Length: 148
Image (cartoon, rainbow, N blue to C red; front, side):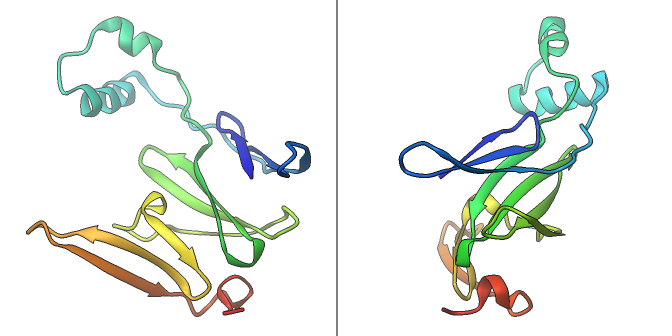
């Protein structure tokens, strides 16, 4: 089980007894945002005129981690916030050591996929309302997606 402190780049790997097995930490530059950025973010959420207190209350920095996902073969993917609506996926090995970063694919959210030994899959709703199951094979990361 992984628990993260998303305002910092710190992830605790816990066993089923709740004991910490290891801690994943990575240097992270906090992403500061301006008052204009805050207005843009809040307007997209509230769809109305914003009260000044909402803008003042909104934090000056974005969170460090948007999401974490377990990958095959014990690896971990961390959806890292690098800007407003900009992310990288940091990959850690089974011992919690950083391996590399990859750019997320456009139109494919980490939240909406399930990982398998071959790659990943998702269910996508098309404009006409039909749902389509899509599979994506990953061939260039055999240490993670090598069928075992």
